[in-house]
Length: 103
Image 1: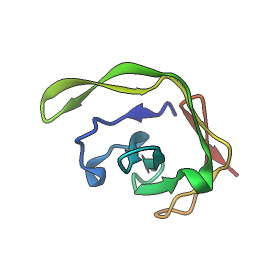
Image 2 (image 1 turned 60 degrees about the vertical axis):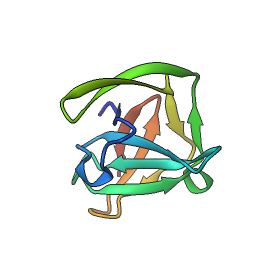
Image 3 (image 1 turned 90 degrees about the vertical axis):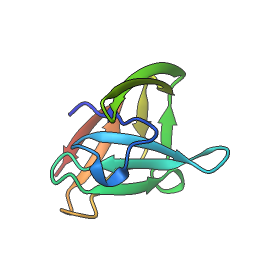
């Protein structure tokens, strides 16, 4: 499933399956919220645990409250480590913005 960036102001609890939202604290990358492609549970995955690899930042768009907004996000996104969904327990990997279910 292709991951899709959610708008920066989007509520994490309302993310759709496969949507991702970058999170940071006044500086470097902290991690990403990822809505599980299987159950839609919005898990938080930290950079220190998953080791996200971000490509160059580019302008992208997303709809937020009925309005299309433009923001910057990585052109590509991968993770060195897989993660397990906190909702359904399935394991996933992320390669070049493709979320893949693992056995």
